[in-house]
Structure formats: C-alpha cells, structure tokens
Length: 243
Image 1 (cartoon, rainbow, N blue to C red):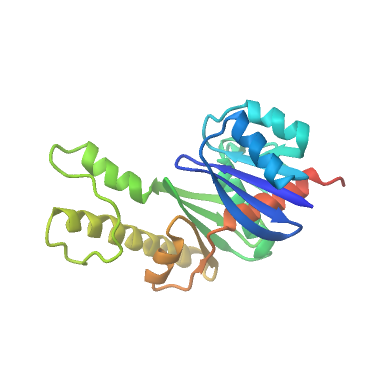
Image 2: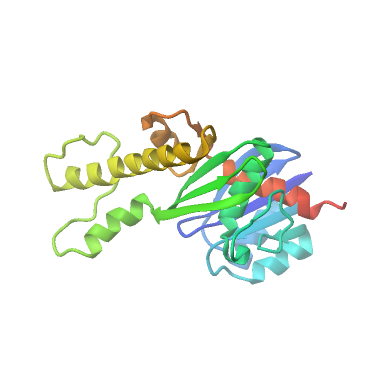
C-alpha cells in the first residue's frame, strides 16, 4: 500500500511517499495545480493520501485526491492520538498537529518537546499523558534575515553561511552571527526553561537545517528531518483505515 503525505508550508510544497510503514522519498512540488497533482498520482499510484496545509492552497486538488485515493485533510476534526486541553483546539496549526501525533506515536507515555524549524520556529510540548499543552512560536531564520533588511534603510539581505564567525567582522557576518547564534541560544533557553518545569523530556528537532542546529546544541537532541511526515502517516493510518 502506498500513501502520499502532503505538507504545504509557507515556503515549500512537499510530499512524502510511504510504502507500508516505510518512508521512501520526499518530493518537492513546483506548484499545486491540478496538472501537477494528476502527474504525481500517475507516477506514484497511491492508495491513501493526507494533506496538511497552512496556506491557501488550490482547493481543487482535494477533489482530485478524494476521487483517486482514500483521502483525509488534516484539521481540528481529525481523529488524533493525543488530547488538546487548550482554549481553542480548532486554532492549532495542521503542522503542529502532525508533529504531536508523531511524538505520541514514537515516544509514548513520555514528555516531549518538538521544535519545528520552518518559516517560523514552533515549540510544541506534549506530556506523558499524551496531552498537547501548547508551546511558543517565534520568527524563523529566513524571516529574521528578511526582517532586518526590510525594516531598515541600509542593512543588506543576507543568507545563512554555516562557516560564519562568532564575532562578525563586517555587516554580513554580524547579521549571520546575530541570527544563527541567536536561534541556537533561543532553543537552548527554551529547553532549559522547560527542564526547570518538567524535568526529563525528549527533545526532537525537525524541519529545515535541523541537523546543523542539533549539532550546535549542548543538550541531547533527536534530529529527524522527516518527523512531520511520520506524524502525517500515523494520522493517515488512524483516519483513512476502517475501524
């Protein structure tokens, strides 16, 4: 059985292909047109599909997926393997639901902090009772670089260079050090604060550049680039398979 797990984020449109329980490959889509989705379905011949979207995507693809696969769209109505004792569970982003589903599945009966590195950095905490307590959201790396350029008159737009110096020697390296070291310190600060409150817990880092940031942290981290996809697959199995 083949399952397609769609992750439509603010930066990229991605899809993971699973065969049975095994992750096979990740595909980047150029767009979400009907033609692109039809071509993907022809190439992969899926049985099931699930869509997580935090953008205003082409709604026509939902009809295509529903017609040619057993389809589920991730939302607050999705059957999940954890509870959400928060004020408005319907406001929880689809990406955060998928991350918490993966945490509950792979780290059952344990406290876990899942940090998603994307357009924004999300901190998502689920306790040992499988309750998603919430977390925090802060600007992502690219957003920080762009903000300093857009909201100043003279600061240039720069991108990450992993060989940046700690002490910047010009404007470019000052910006790189400020953003990248700032994110490292932010992540470590959150881990420390959560540790003071909850004691032992797992920390999972996922999303863009997760391997790099995990290697820079002083805490023990599980870096899993495909963690969100694994959560989507688990939710697909829960919602698309007959009970």
